[in-house]
Length: 472
Image 1: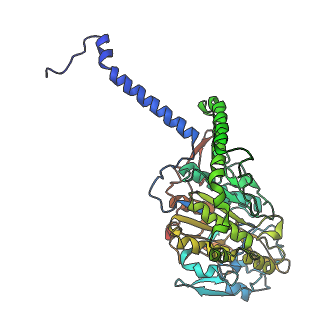
Image 2: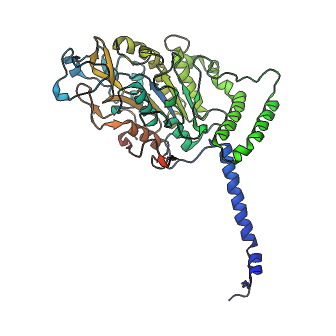
Image 3: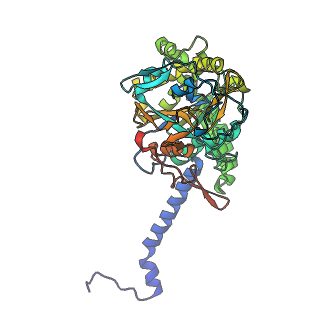
């Protein structure tokens, strides 16, 4: 045995020899506690993805009420040929909310043309969006489980048909945190015309800790109030106030109280927003050409154009998830065309087509489209049968959505509905498949992204989703 090796003979010598080891263990424990405390102070700190990510942020262009696939991205010549006739029995049955058993098929008055190198067909509702088709992956075979607004909206955002579950925005920031310290991680910009059937619960954090809830912006030109410091109060004084609040809440923070952690985080964020956010919300510092591209300053595009431009500015500054809602208030103020599909969709498309196309072009011009996943769609489509003389009912059996940017392979059509657009028949994709694909592009694995709730490990997709491989 080498002479320099010491042999421990008794307990006293063992403790002496192990002193440094115990110190190392204690130090490691202290560092771990410090890390846990830091995490509780800032649970929105950036987190590494499960695998290399293609996208850093998501912009969800939510067309609330259910845009008709038959009048937008899924032309059906046979439907026009059968206009006014009963649906042939060979297409099977469908359950609707308002369509009667004597309803007749309703053709579309829209015209479709092929655009771009990809030759994707788009209706004349979207002349601006049509110029961007080579960046779009149009999924014509989406389907969901519910035919009523509230349940379908819950499923679109949370993967469940009842409230109380976290939205995909909350799941995303739970998994990845935020890259911005001075802006909210997850933002919802509702339509100024009013609330939706599912209400705010479809956007919220559900059973996830409160810090993962969305920040709801106000409609209009001042999405966030009280960004200015009170008269006579400077930044140093405001910081002292926040430090005092933090000290008073420290006992609850040490006890792991997530509500207090969310509250302290909100106070810190509010302080930082007062110093940095006003410039983000001031669209007047954008070039006039950019504002004109979004349709700002004219009707009917001013409002949605402002919100789309703000969405670009937010993701540019590190905001992780932004939902920009088109449609609010009762019935016809959404894409909910029960009475007159022509009047409704012409009006809603006129508000959104130019701003959506401008957002895609602007992101691409700034090199942000590669890292920003853009989603367009509603909670369902519209029925091939007419409701009344000119309207279409809710339809969940087959409809269209599209994705762009964030590593998505654009310029292609995925899946198909049957010849009258009744149901998805080629490569049908459920909402959970869209969710899984979104998570995949962000570097999140659907099984790993989980949270223990009431003894059950919950996930956005219930581990049933499939990545839409054709588009990634």
